[in-house]
Image (cartoon, rainbow, N blue to C red):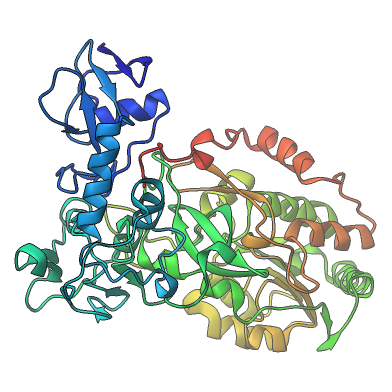
Length: 519
């Protein structure tokens, strides 16, 4: 393998490694605009120029590969002067509207200006004006004056999605990114172009002017839009989720996520079940746990455990499902009828989108030893219509196409306990006991994706109002029924859960950070 020296640091890298990547291995960041680790390297921005001893001129680090014995300088005076000149050239026609730009605080042009240029513009002529606030697609807005023509967005649409909607139009200082005639930037991953844009040229119509990014707190989490479980940065402000951004994980989603998954954050904040409810009236947790326990125990004593339908949710974490299993086995008893709800299947593709729109169905299979004998929402509706159930204990409100039948059937049961993060409309109206659960943003836990990758989610902020994680709710109700579950902390549940299911511990890649030059 080639051995080279970068800024006095000797480093050994694989043959074919670029100078930019080798510098990152040595611990030095080479500034760049057009380079992205998942895309081709056109070397058109010239921001990554480095000095190689013996070379007649500076060389683009994103394109040129290492040779054995190279001596490279990434911070020499010659390199810094070149970077300053490149930045000045880029800023000649730039509007410098950072105070009103959504990318302020996340803009590489802004960062590099303060690092290498930081001088008053020498431009005295009228700047070249281009299109502003142009809806280049249904979810993305383009600002031609901020665009530095790095072509990342064009290469993304050509090399990742294969849809090729974008191109460069015109030449020189009139060049702009545009869609081909008759097309919009409307693929399923269009908002990834906002992520790869290093400046404020492409912005999300959903997030535009919503919140300054330095006010947001970011928490590592997992998208719950489908069973792929794309790794995300969950950005939140004052206990409210404001947006999702893809988080690098080469084992799952690389640098990307789909638009539907990205916008699914809205469901976290809408229609929340905030307080324990007993027959429509707000109650305390002590009261509600005792009421749920006594009512459920009465049904079991009179009609047996087989008269109870217990509905688990593939939207819940594996820890929640593990406690649900223990609750069903100990508090309700042998013979309990098990069902699983969830969202109906949807569209899929060969990149990231999966048809199963439930993030932890694989985790449910591991916890319950497979789902044989566990009915779906349609089977629950059949059992209700046949009068086979006297009580229903339901996690979550996702019932898919069977929703209407289940809602109608619940009118005839003596006890309906709803344990969910959201109200569920008619479901809340039908519930004799309603138990507010936390969303995945409000608790820690694990999900298992369609490829059996076990992934962790961190708590972003405290549960809303009186909500609790599902596993804590099961412990409260079980304790009130005289069946104390032997756990105090989440880690205890995880130890028992992984031992029982023989599932692997969460992979390190689930929280792996992107390589240094991934901006």
